[in-house]
Length: 421
Ligand SMILES: Cc1cc2nc3c(=O)[nH]c(=O)nc-3n(C[C@H](O)[C@H](O)[C@H](O)COP(=O)(O)OP(=O)(O)OC[C@H]3O[C@@H](n4cnc5c(N)ncnc54)[C@H](O)[C@@H]3O)c2cc1C
View (spheres, rainbow, N blue to C red):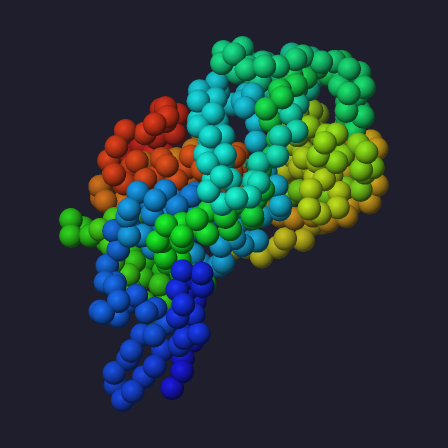
């Protein structure tokens, strides 16, 4: 009798893939051939660390933990990567002139080193430098914040008027009176390709990954942790939650602090000589149409643009619906018309994704208040992807009870966890 079980996608690491999804039952005895490492002769079913959610933070956590010698298992409800959570859509902005808070610059510098290390380890390019543009109407917060970050950290930058920017980068046609900070180190990183790369590196370092296996329940005590998927129980000494938009489903006390918001982006047809990566720096801009972000054409036709938080629609994480309605499209087109008129052609494609948002829009890292063997990490609030290589390092430090290598004062879990819970 053959029965399909959870798919272990360790195709590269394990030559047993031919029997990877089979469970063999003889009489009442079950030999779990689906996961050869569960057989006593091959490896124990007990891990050092289980990571729940193999997305942006989870894939990086797996890599760093495995590299540090931990026997680690990643459990993902869909595939790694997937188009149902927060990391799809080809590209993500990387910028160092951070208006959110100047303290991010130290995190960004370490993240940049991490991207370079991952590229060297995997032998592929994940980061593309285009320069970045930050600003809006004279005196706006985005301009002031980016300028402050550049000055405070001695980053190279120039300030430009709308006309000067358009002369350099004709894709930009910002209204008269807009002013921007141009920073040469910004650019973009690949989205799905980075998840794939970190999962591959983690596997090479010995990590196991189980896909299509939603975690339904977990327990922790001083002896260790137990994690249940449909029909399986996994055990480990420690547990890490990197479940993105589903975090508060697994950790209900966080439900009041973590809002899941629908975020839409569109790809608009625009001339390649304006919107190809070598001509078009990434941007974040304040505007009457909202806080806009955008990236050059890459891998799929069209210039990519979105409005941060879009319509502010709070949604359940598994709400169906990647399709856009008329209001969505109008919002995106207004953004294009405001500053990128040569791309005011057809909307070529679009996508809806999920932001997990904290009240102050910083991240969440910490140890569970009741279980010191459970770590929680959410690189959330719509700007976490660029930190991917650093996220795993932070998780690994928390798992090992080491001080983090970067300041995390803004991102502590305590501010999000209700006092009474
Ligand atoms: C449209 C859009 C544009 C963005 N642009 C940028 C940008 O330009 N720059 C930037 O830095 N950031 C950007 N972000 C933000 C960034 O992508 C996210 O902050 C980041 O991807 C979040 O990472 P995560 O690991 O928390 O979540 P995810 O990458 O979503 O990973 C969570 C994983 O956990 C899995 N999971 C959840 N529950 C379970 C369970 N019970 N069992 C098993 N698995 C589970 C999910 O399926 C998922 O794969 C953008 C986000 C969106 C949506």
